[in-house]
Length: 308
Ligand SMILES: Nc1nc2c(ncn2[C@@H]2O[C@H](COP(=O)(O)OP(=O)(O)OP(=O)(O)O)[C@@H](O)[C@H]2O)c(=O)[nH]1
Ligand SMILES: [Mg+2]
Image (cartoon, rainbow, N blue to C red; front, top):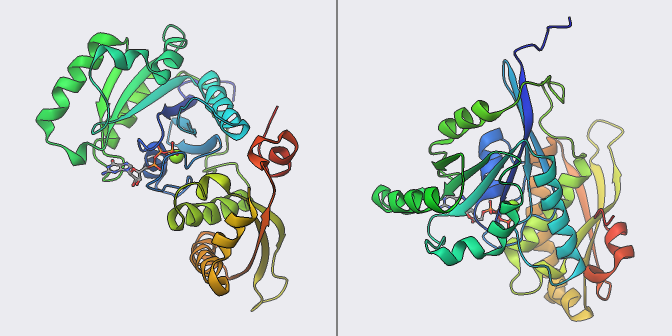
């Protein structure tokens, strides 16, 4: 038994980068499961999200993280702490950039993500992932690879399309090369460790990000206050969720005229929650305004963010 895991490789891989580069999309593509919500808006991910991939003789624990930004309020500070904690936990760092947006001049190495990365450069392997290559001509990627190989000690540079699944096998191969020898951390059939209610709240938040504009998604969070499983055949699970906003006026926007907007959120969220849980649910949504909840330690804690 002692040697059961002699040749086994296991480790943590943090996926970090600026907002909107495609980190969560990559996690979902790698695991072939929707673990992390994805929207066209930046700052969608607010937690450190775990996705576990187990093979015959390896286990990679991926940590999806909030996009790296300079925080302006406490929630964003908390989000950055999640990203930092993933970087600290990681055996390998995947640093992702968007091929369409990344700058290739010296100034880029002075930006916040690079300032953070520099602290880890001589501690752990950092792999540059150039994402969204489906949007450009192959020839456009070469000078970008060339530039980054000169300005930062990346161990590898891998162009991919997380959305189209291009070059994902190559990325996996590269990760396996750097993965340490270690017994598995989780049982082989485990894909994540977050409870169902976390995903339910995230699905509702995703719909809000998709439907509303400007400050609304950023001022909103979702808390599941009741999750009662059906006791009998033919019954539905009952889920009561509270949507928190920062102002009364935002509450009005989320609810909409005659409750139309909230109904839209509810319908879209319920469909996906049912698909996710594989059973019918009754989703009850309430909207509450709590002034400056994003800047309140007590509220953040109450709403499911680990503050300290
Ligand atoms: N064309 C293209 N779009 C992509 C690709 N990967 C992600 N996207 C899109 O980019 C947007 C952002 O994707 P996310 O996965 O949410 O990005 P993220 O880095 O997790 O963003 P934050 O959580 O806000 O930091 C979404 O609209 C995705 O569909 C890709 O390979 N190609
Ligand atoms: Mg994300």
